[in-house]
Image 1 (cartoon, helix red, strand yellow):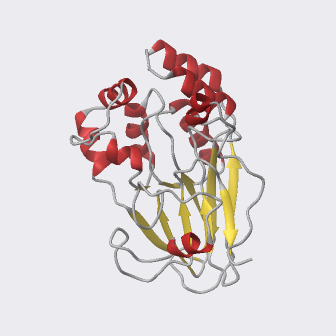
Image 2: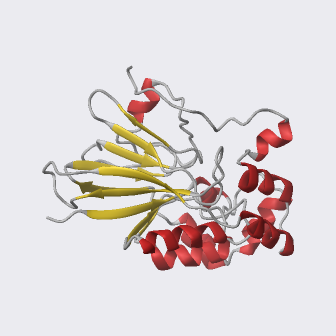
Length: 266
C-alpha cells in the first residue's frame, strides 16, 4: 500500500496570518489530510475566521482548553481580553467549539496513534516537555476522557506551544506538535507531518516530521492593533519574540524553550 501523509496543526489561537502560511505550505506538499489538535481561539485577533477556516479544511478537529473555557457560559474568571476574544466569535462557534471531541484514535503503519490537546485526562491538565516518567506513561492510558479501546503506542498533543519528540525503551512515542499561531522559544509557526500506511496494524515505514513556516508576524500584530484587540504587549511578546506573556509580566526568563529532553526511563 502507498504511504500517506497527514498534517497535524495545533494552537492557532486566532492567528489567521500564521494559519494561512501553514496551510499554503501543506498544500504545496500535496497533503490533503489535516488534523487539528485544538485551541483555535484566544490570544490572537481573528478567532472567528480561524474557526471557519479550520471547519473548511480540517478532517479532524479536537477540543482545546481555550475552546472549552472561553465560550463557557459558567466561566467564573473574566477579563477585558477574554470578553473581547469571546465576543469576536459568533454564537454558533461557541457551541461548535465546546462540542468538539476530546481525542482522535487511528492506525498508521502498525502504530495505534492517539491525538488530544493537553493530556489523557483533561484539556486543562498540562504535560510539559520536562515531565517525569509517570506523566509520560499516563499519556498512554485510557481514561474517562479518552474512553475505552486499544491503548495507543504513539501519542501526539499540543497545548504547551513547545514541540518535542520522545521515545522510550518499549518504543512508546510521544510528540508535541507545537503551535501554529503562538509558538514559544522560536516564534516561527510549526506543524507536524505524519507519514505511513493508513489503517494497517502491519509494520510499515513511518515518520514524524516537524516543519517550520515563516510568515509576516509584524503584519499580524498590526491587524490586532487595527482591530482594537486588548493585551497587545503580550501578543507582541509571543508572536514576535517567542516569550510567553506571563513571563513578560512577571519579569522572568522564558519557561517554554529548551534544547533537548531525555527518553523516559533513561
